[in-house]
Structure formats: C-alpha cells, structure tokens
Length: 338
Image (cartoon, rainbow, N blue to C red):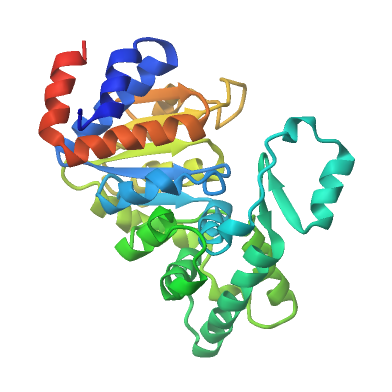
C-alpha cells in the first residue's frame, strides 16, 4: 500500500486548469520547505466552522505552517468547534430555505453559516463565562494583551471534560501549544469582538486591554524579519479580505515606512472563489502585488480558483504525506511530475 496515496492521486490526475495549479502549488510549497523555508497562512471565510482543523491542526504540529493571520471569526470558531461540536446542526438543504425557515433557526438560537450552524448557548455564552474573567483580570492587573493571546491561554486551560470536538482537530489548540506567531486583524468584526465591545460599553473594562491592529503590525515587523531569515517565508492565502491584505503589507511597510531592508515573500498561493474583478483585493491577480512591492517577478505564484473547503484539505494531506514520508514522496514526484 502506498504511503503517499493523496500525493500520488494528485500527481496522476491533476494535469490541467485549476487541478494543474493545485499540483504545482503543492510541489513548490514542498520544495520551499525542503530548502529550509517557512510558510505563513491566512484564514478568511468560515473555515473553522467548516472544520479545516482536521488537516490544519496536524499541519501545524508537523511544522508545515509557521505563522497565521486569522479573522476573529475563524479564531473563535475553532474554539467553538472544540467545546460545542455536538450541538452544531447541519442544514444540507439550505439552498431551498425560505425566510420562514431561517426565522425558525433563529428561534432555535442557532446561527447559520451556509449549511451548518453555531449554537448560541453552547458556544457563544459558554465561552463567554470563561473569557470574561480573563478580561476583567487583565484590567485589574493592567496587563494588555493581543486578541489571540487571550484565546491561546483560554483554549489551553479548558479542562478536557468540556471538549466535545476532538482536541487533535482544533487548529487553535495546536497553534497555542506551538505559540505560533499570529495576527488577528479586524478582530472587532467577530462575535466575541461584539461581546467585548458590549462589556466596554458597560464599563466593565476599557477597550485598551486588547492591543490594537496597529500594535499587531508593529509587532509583526519583527516577527516577519525573524521568520524570513534564511530561505524566506511564503504566503498561503485562503480567500481574501483583511486576513490576507493585512499581513502581506508588512514587506512594503518595512521597506518604505521603517526604511529598512526586507526580503520579499518567497512564495505565494491563493485559494479563491472570487473571479478577477475591478478594484477587488480578493479578485486581484498576484502580478498586481508586484507593483506594491509585496512580491517580485521571481516569486512562485499560484491562484487556485476553487472552493477552499475542497482544495485546502487535499493540499494539506499531500504535504503531510511529504513530511512523514519524504523519501517516498520525492521518488514519486521525480517519477510522476512531468
């Protein structure tokens, strides 16, 4: 039996169009790691609700991912999946719902995300009772922290008895244990960003106990310079929006705003279901980033126009096989790459 069945399937079948780009992106990713490079991931959309952690968590543990930019929603939803997994409800027939159907879901205190739903009481309110004391303690001690640092501490201190999902499938837990560099731009636009704001309004604590997005970038300058040493660090982007645009800007900002030297991103791949469009970051071609000094004409660039819930697990599974069985993977690549 092959030790690299996913990689072999991709090499044998993914010959053209988006399949070809997927194959080439995997091979370039693997070569970058073999050369001593690192990889930075960005998570837009609702990937945590779609359970990307099944493959993302082991990828973090096995050194395929070295930093993450996440929306506040993806961050918290990885935690929700861990503590409230059994209370999620799926709606495979969502395309045929009426307004009355969704109103019924609202009355059930479920919050629909495409074909699944997050339970209000078992997720939002259950987690709030754990994190609220942390926020209050931060105020009392004068200890300001980055948004993800609260969640890193929380997910590690939660007792196993409150886990409903599998701990080994929580990418947030894997990232917390590795103390992975992370930025969470625009975290205000999330359920817990809203909950945090409500407590600020009630004067339970000031907004300043959570460090700002500007402070995230100031910290990220140094993190990028460290991660990009040697063979450099690549950029693997799911979707678009602020999760991708915020961290990729670190290179031109170091060069033009700090007036220091900075290596360009060493690799670029985006999985996007946005078609090329006017004025859109999500739909911009990678070449546009050359003009902003984020990439160069030498950067390996890939755009996979597909559904990330389908493509990302395939890519991660193939890369995990490469990591676990490098000799077999290299032999297979040498045989089937052409």
